[in-house]
Image (cartoon, rainbow, N blue to C red; front, side, top):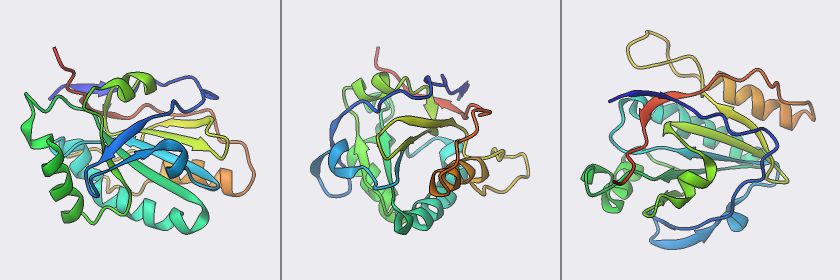
Amino acid sequence: MSLTPSNMLKLGTKAPDFRLMDAITDHLVELQELKGEKGTLIMFICNHCPFVKHVDDEIVRLANDYRPLGFNTIGIMSNDIENYPQDRPEMMKEHAMHHQYSFPYLFDGTQEVARAYDAACTPDFFLFDDDLKLVYRGQLDDSRPGNGIQPNGRNLREAMDAILNNRKVSEDQKPSIGCNIKWKN
């Protein structure tokens, strides 16, 4: 495991379109059909990363808390499944069921979507407004495995609350830290 920070995609970037298989439903889905009325949270996550495991319960809480307020959440797994078979789609489905994911968990087998978003690590969070323009990228909160801080989603929740209250999202954003995305050779 290498500690990798977010690349911090430029704020205002339009969310790149995609069409990916949802490992939970086995259906192809597109960004336009998944976007939220108020905003869309796209997370690059995986099954095996200790940083994702550390925040799994909080991302489920956050998705459930903000869905009724007009935000949709999307999880995307882009790791190389040849070298990391624990991230295969059937394992994604099992992981999502175990953690009661209430959001689509999409398989990016070509890794093109991760590259389009300039995703670097798991977890890597991208929050888009109702026009699918990037308003937040970076960490969920200050918690990390072993640092004694419980996940609460503070940074991401503050950004989502700013959108809800028609305020500008603070540009003072910290990169997420996690395992690097496992790129294919």
